[in-house]
Image 1 (cartoon, rainbow, N blue to C red):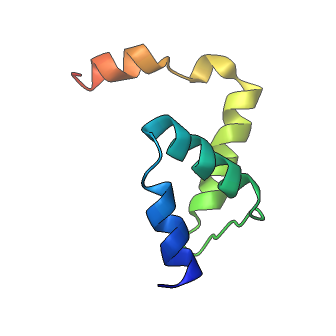
Image 2 (image 1 turned 180 degrees about the vertical axis):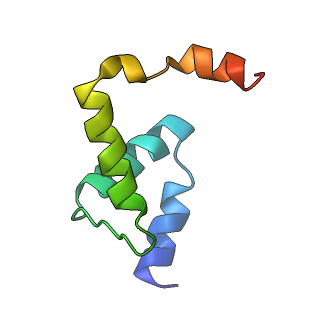
Length: 70
């Protein structure tokens, strides 16, 4: 068994909350990586800037769920 397999096996024995905390801790140790192969990141940044400039252009989460029928 490799070290990674052993760690994975050990981590799977944790509670959901413990695994979530571990995952968050591990993700924070990774460098930020943005990939814009399909221009998705550029679009997200454009929309973020648009919303920052005009917050009224946004929609509340509850309103969006209602609009989607959920």
